[in-house]
Every structure is written in structure tokens, then in C-alpha cells.
Image 1 (cartoon, rainbow, N blue to C red):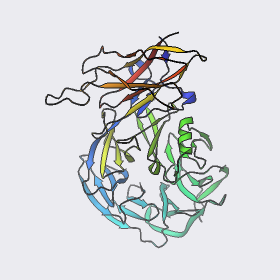
Image 2: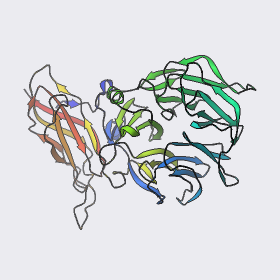
Image 3: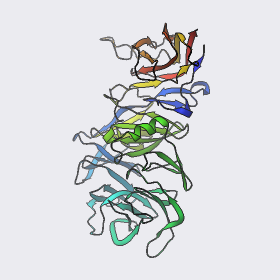
Image 4: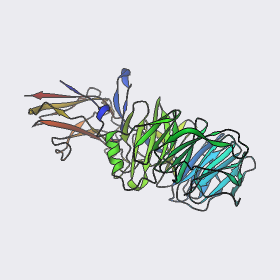
Length: 462
């Protein structure tokens, strides 16, 4: 019985949805596993506006929900520390331990003095409209919205700015979309270029461009730049995802991802974040206008689509923080912070639709009679029965269909049982699957249960 590879890293044209490849699962073997689900962590219950930004300072989590900034304890109690002028749009937080700064991109900025419990708008007339925000060497640093310039605050004080404390990213005449601190250096991402600056201690302005370091690619948006694993990850102006290595960059886009991004109407609102879970590092990019989210696993160099209920659109996460030993994401739909966990098998009560399309099977144009198809899975993972009514997930089912024409059309769906709780010897197998000269199988799972595929096999007759 030949085994079908779970995924083909060299030509990943159809990437999994809500499933990811792990190199070691049970007994050190690789597997495809369900992406983590969501459970409610905090509901601020004040509006339907989104969670716009989160940041940990000391023992507290600070959350911008709509137009209100909350201070959250590890016991999930919270209090408002102030309000901003708008309840929607992108925002970024940074801190130096004494001050928390909040940049409302394209609008204005605010500070919270942690020691004095003082929240205020930045009223300094020299404070420019922020396009992005970061922090380095006692300075809060922002790109000026829709210009070539980036500015620094007074040392240690984001309430004070000087109109002369700026640099012009002028290597070529493009717009500076965003800045990101990478390994102690300022990376300035323009619409068609990347420049790098170091703190030289110059009295006039401390940050000077590194001579000879220039990239002829730009960034797609202000917030698509993500720092992780000592590298910058970003979407470039040619719509390719890239990773830096030292001062060079390389393309990391898989074929299917590149094709989809090329087809996007809008990429200027792309934003990203990273998280590390169980030894794997993930870079998450969302395109709000396109209603799509892609995830890149740094360890495996593989991609998957992260989709949400009800229409397989973008994932619900709008921002991320690791707080109190939990992976937390803020919702783009409402003022709820969710916990992200592999032990959550649904998205806050909504189904997670996991889809895996396996590599194509063919034999030099010969007709193949597929007598059966079998999955090696974790069986017997059904939920405890509801005594009053049938419970979703009590008797979990797996759906199989297939294409014989390179995904132009699909067969009727057929279901098979994954096994009720404790039915560990259940076999997931489909028989009498017809004849074709080429075939791709697709497996779909929507039950709120554990879902792991360790192997896929097929039997054929000629």
C-alpha cells in the first residue's frame, strides 16, 4: 500500500487550511495537526469595536479596545487608564518601563506614565503624525506618516519631541512606510527601498545610515515588518514574503502563497506578528481588505492558511501578546481577548474547518483503479456524550473527496468515522474510489476534537 506524502515542501502549491506540519509528533514522527483554537480570556463588554493593540509592561497587560486603554492583571481584572480619539484603525504600543506610548497610526499619539498613573495625548507641537512606532536606546522612534522622515523623542521621554531630531531616508525618493528595530539597528522600510541605521552617538542626530547597505526592495505596508529569530520578516513591494539574513534578504513565499498575494487587490493594510509555541516559531500575516491570513513556520519553512468562521475568511486575531503563560490574541470583530491553545478545538464556539489536499498521484498517463484510501489518525477522540441531546463531536466524522482534473472540479463527499471516545481501534478508510489517470485526495474535518494525521495510504489495481 503506497504512502502519500502529507505535503511536498518543494512544490507547495496547495497549502493546508487550519492544519500545520510538525516534524515530530508521536514517537518523534511527523504529522499534520489541527491549528490552535480560541477560548475567551477577557470580554471588556463595552462595545463591538476591535482589540487594536496589546503590550506587556511589568506585571500588567495593556490593551487598546476600541478607544479605551485597559490595564489588565494576571487575575484578569482590569481598569481603564484613558481613552483615545478614535475607536478604529491600526495602533501600536511601545514602552521603556516608565512610559507606555500608544501611536494611533495616521492620527496622533498618547502616553501613560506608569509611575504617576498619568494618561495624556502627546501635545508637543513638534510631534509628527505617526506612521509606525518602535523603541531603541532610550528613544521612542516613529516614521512620519506619508513622508520620508523618521523622528526620535527626547531621551527617555515620549511626551517631548524636537522638530530637528529627524533623519531623511533619502537613498531613493520613496515614502517611508515603517521602521523596525532589528538587532539594535533601525531598519527603515520605504515603499521601494530598505535602509539600515546605527546609533553612532552623533551629537546632531544619533542614528546614521550604514554605508553600502541598501536593498532595492521596499515593504508593502507599515506593519508588515516582523522581528523574530534575529531576522526581519516582511512582505516586499513586489508582493513576495522575505526574510533577512544579516544584511541580505531571501524570498520565503511558497508558490501557492505567492500566487494568492499577487491576486490581491489591496496589500497596503497587511500586518504581521509572531509567536513561538512548543518549539516552533510562526509569523502570521493578515490582509484585512482581502479577508485572508497566512502563517509561515520558520522551523519547517512551510506555510498554512489560517481561516476563521463562517466563510473561511481571515483569522480572528488582530494583535498578539504572551501574558501570564498564555498566548493571547485580540479580536478584530469585537472587544474580546482570546486565549490561543492547541487544547481549544474550536474558535470560541465556532467550528475550525481543517482542509488538507494531498499531493497528486499519477503513473505516466496510465489509468489507476483506486480500491481504497486510508488515513492513519488519532482515533477515539470523540467528546463525552451529551445525555440530553446528540453532542457535536460525540461521533466525529472525516470527509473525503477528490479531483481527477487538477482541482477544476471535485467528487461527491464521502464520510467516515474517526471514533467515539475510547474507540481507539477505529479505522478511517474509504473503499471503491473509481479509476483515473491522475488523482488528488482532499480531507476535511470540522469537529471540535483533536485532529492529527500521521500518514495517508492508497491501494490500487491496474
